[in-house]
Image 1 (cartoon, rainbow, N blue to C red):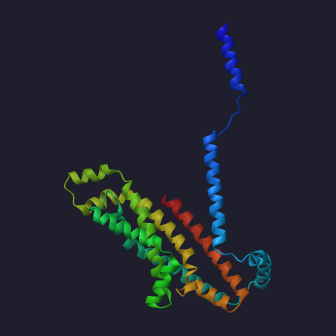
Image 2 (cartoon, rainbow, N blue to C red):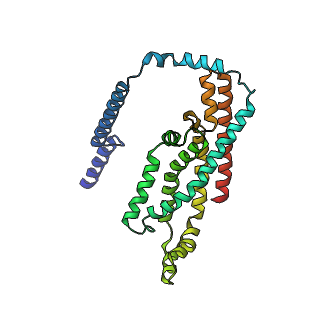
Length: 275
């Protein structure tokens, strides 16, 4: 009877306890994190010196700009179409050229294929350098070197894409099955044959998927290169903004949206076929 009474009392005590997802220590930690985050946000907002009257007036400015952009002006559709083709050409050429640089870099940046630690860090330094600099910054650099035009845009997108493709391909190489590689090495196959017949077949699906994805990204990035003089539809967009031709600006923005949607649809179909 005593044991039964003790069990009943213990069960009653447990039933009186309120379930809580976090204990006191976890709750205190969460509140401290929330407080630190709030302080950081307030500090950042105060430090960047926002001119708040412009922020409060933004809805009126948006309404005014929208009224000036409507209806879109389609009289320059031929020039817009040509600029859109130029944008696609920039994205396509830069993606194709990137392959010849990114593949060797990914090979030396992968731990299981790099010749030594020096080449490993050289490859990773190239990938990090490429991804650390935005496409617009690359475009500004090449415009200063080669002058305004499509060449600067192609090189800018290419140098940016090297880090993206090289990093993902390097990770794909590191995840390959080592058994085919070891089997070919045991037969005395050369390095080139090991790469061609043991590594390349395993990473080909990932390679095509990465290239297609990067081409889609490059189309979107190529649309803004013209803002710094690196060719593409952005040149026409910047010129229309400078001339206050807001109806033409609306048409160009619609064309960019259509181009991005078509590119997304095409890449989705291609990736399904590859993957």
